[in-house]
Length: 80
Image 1 (cartoon, rainbow, N blue to C red):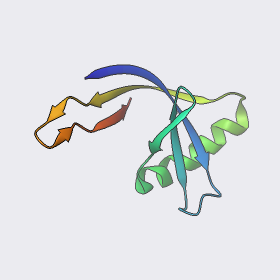
Image 2 (image 1 turned 90 degrees about the vertical axis):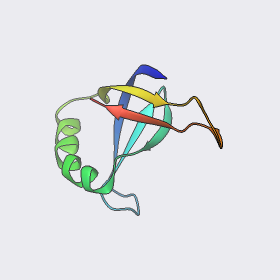
Image 3 (image 1 turned 180 degrees about the vertical axis):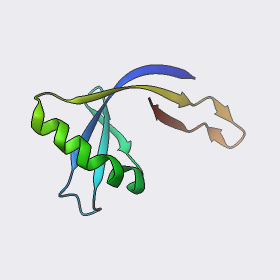
Image 4 (image 1 turned 45 degrees about the horizontal axis):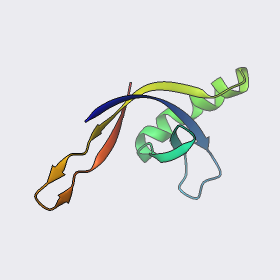
C-alpha cells in the first residue's frame, strides 16, 4: 500500500528520550523520528516554531501493509 498523507512534526524537548520529535498524522501519533535525526532537526524545528504560528507539516506516504506468511504486514511512514 502507498497512501499520501500530511504529517506534522511536534518537538518534545522535555521528553525523557532527549531531543524527541513526534510525528502525527490526522491528530494521531504514528511514531517518532530516530534519535539521531531528531537531534539534527530539533533546533531548526524549534526556531521555526518560534518564528511562526501553526504546525510544521510535511508531505508523507504511509507504506507497507498487505499480508505476510506470518500475519499482517507492517506499516511505515516516509517523510519528504
